[in-house]
Length: 405
Image (cartoon, rainbow, N blue to C red; front, side, top):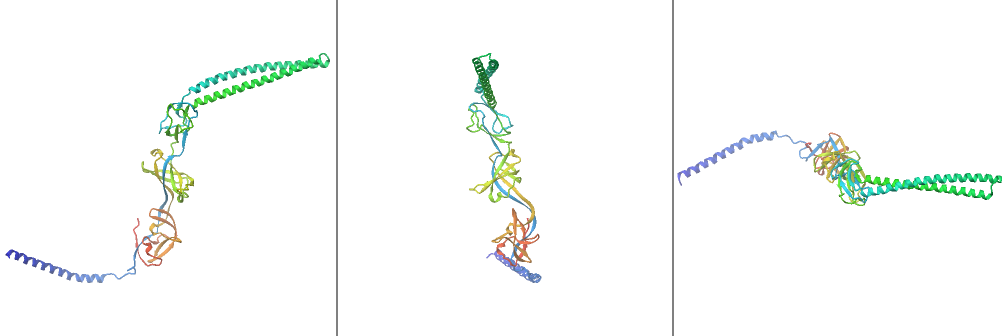
């Protein structure tokens, strides 16, 4: 073997020996320290050997009771605009979908041609009826004058007959003439009344035509936004088909939220609502407008109508989530995980002097990870937060206070 290889092996053995000696010295130096550490270790406490259980302190918190629901955005009130005159072709359309119109604004015009012809005919008929009235009035005057003269002749003849200066035949003839003249006067009066009725009828028909001519202008009955337009130029206006226009009154929108029947009874008109849609990154404000009294028998859901304060950034037909604020108050609260359930009701496991005590409680608002406890505990009490299923009434534990968020 070469000299240099022997020299390397001898150096490695010397190095291993030095490492062994250092390790032995370190171990011997550590023995007094270990003895001192054992001597300084604390004596076992009362909780030694007991299970460490996480507990929380009962404190007051600001909780909010909310009902979460969803539904479609729709108009608070839709107004259907139908033509009031049928059978007339549509000449012009003055409004488009999305336009905001005022009450009385013209939306479309119908052709007035046929109605104009009818008005001319009725004006001629009215003139003829008024001429007939004038003739009837003259006939009445003439017949009345003849009747008066015949009545006077009959009176004179009757007086002469009583004095013996007129024959009975003359008296009979005079009385007959007076009766006939009176009948002709009555007939003339009835003819006048008939002619006047014809005038009134013609005037009424003319007024109706004039009204229909004004109705050829289809106007908005209320102010609002045009949701849809079904009218087309050239089509014949009719109220039997689809409405010409559909307006959203005052451009007011609402959310028709579907609410579970257990939550429906909590809602009241006027409650504050936060509304979220895909179109708005920020929540919109709203309020419960009304709660429908019925519940769907199939889905067991009711409807709450929620008015939207700023409806300009949402559109009819959008889906929206609604967070309805039912109640808001500062109350004693514990974590949700601290609440247990028994046939007798909700319980918590209170810890006093390391001993677990099961206490029946009354719960209220649940907000996130916290639950209101209205009866059964006091502020500052310690309750088992987790592992409640592993401890029983009277168990001894080592309580570990959990961090409060």
